[in-house]
Amino acid sequence: MHSLRGAFSETVYIYGAALSKAIAEKWRPEVLSLGLGLGYNEVLSAALLTAAQQAEDAYVESFESDEGLREYFTHWIRGDSSLVPDEFLRAYDEILQRCAQHAQIDPAKVAATLRLWLNSGQLVLRGPLSATTQFSRRFCCFLFDAFSSKSTPELWQEAFLIDFLSATAREHAVFSTYACTGALKRALRSSGFTLEIREGFSSKRDSTFAFR
Ligand SMILES: C[S@@+](CC[C@H](N)C(=O)[O-])C[C@H]1O[C@@H](n2cnc3c(N)ncnc32)[C@H](O)[C@@H]1O
Image (cartoon, rainbow, N blue to C red; front, side):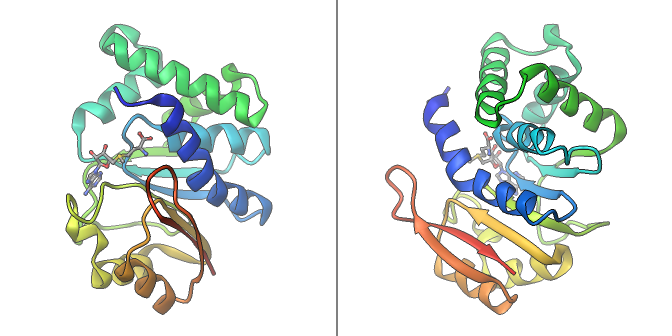
């Protein structure tokens, strides 16, 4: 398992910035997360929105192509620990502790929010995101954490990104990602976003924070 500490710091730096912007603007929290992985962004969303008392009408739609990761995360939220491998349980619990500590809130409250969201359909875990994915709603906060343009090239192409944003972004929206490619910047600008190129995390040169 990769370094949880480094991944947590990156999550706060890159994706926490977008969540904080949406919270500060008091936009209805509708979050699209690409790349569930171990669920850092989902748990951080629950922690920050619960602490800001904006969890009640939140909606989080999260994409993950690996079915096992979706299942383990769901079982963990539901408390079905016997269905989750130990190393995942330990990772989820540590992520929960770190996110709660960051948001200065009781981890039990964050876990309760995740359970409530899952049971009420406010947290929806979907399969792979692709050009044919259909959306039934729009989002104000994008946490775009798929792998790189080398491993998932279709998700980083300018035409895909323009169509994706046109189908999914609310008029007021914030978009964050660890990446900073030319195609991504062009797609965001042509979709009306203002870009802030931030220092990258760890060995990466730049990262992208954009809003409109
Ligand atoms: C960098 S990791 C995400 C880390 C994650 N934010 C976390 O909290 O652990 C990228 C994830 O994107 C997933 N992924 C890759 N292509 C995808 C696609 N087309 N749709 C959905 N998920 C995808 C991978 O399976 C992987 O779990």
